Image 1: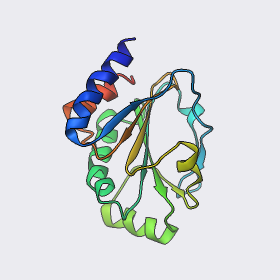
Image 2: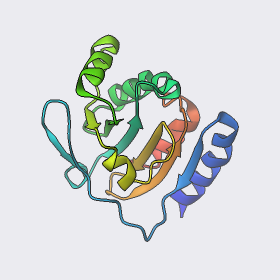
Image 3: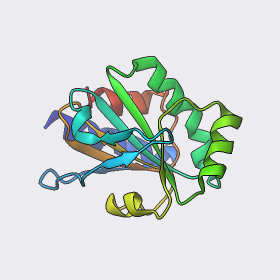
Image 4: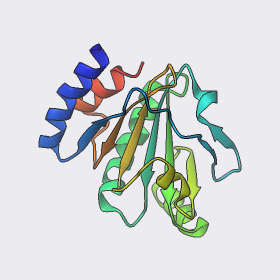
Length: 163
């Protein structure tokens, strides 16, 4: 109940910030998540239970995606991988394009290519960036559509509800 109230409070503030927080229906299960990163490691959502997870859907042609990526990197470093895992799922771009972006920006987050957009479709992603918020208990809490400063106070409240 407290999580729902907190999400509602942050959601009302979020609209003023330019992003939208959508509460995940409690009865809806998360889609299966088994996605390989650029090095071939397969990430399973079930293996991350005990840690909060942000699944960020992005593309290098999306300016708001690029604007929020540094704050995702910072928040991942701030909390550390034992507490928070941030997965950057790239939407429909080639590996050379993704490699170029990662090298150019020195991105350290796990980058998971989604060349056909199947993972994005499975999660109902319709806008970029979109970030799925998964609590440490393994349950999806919310979906955030739009650019967020993940180091700011409103995002901090969203993150705290996941731990």
